[in-house]
Length: 111
Image (cartoon, rainbow, N blue to C red; front, side, top):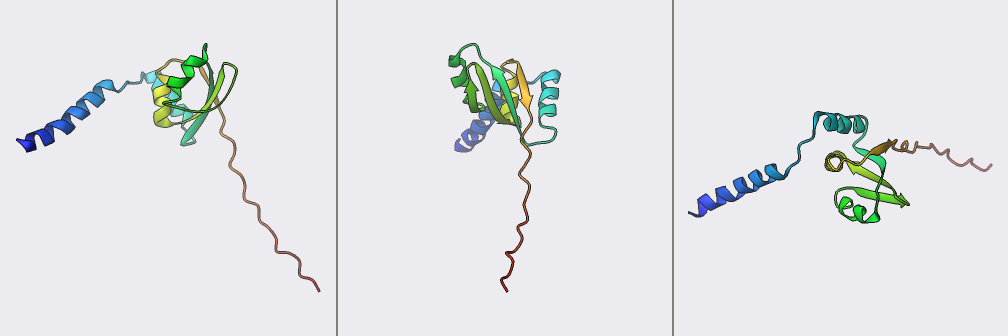
């Protein structure tokens, strides 16, 4: 009997997880793919009509800063897939270029 419960519990979890997962439309999937074409993270900005909207969104995305009603955030592909289902208009921001390594010369020897 315990073995049956041990098998049913994970199966039930998987079924409920699948039911709660939101499918992306083909357009949304294309937007996600475009945002993560060259990087594992993406930065973007969007507007909210009220700052009360930010708290629930902060549970799925990483908020960098806000300037009034304009919110700046960075996300992983999974996080962006969740955000995009909320239907907020957004603008992608290019990730800053990684810092280039600088070669330091050895100090000149004194004579």
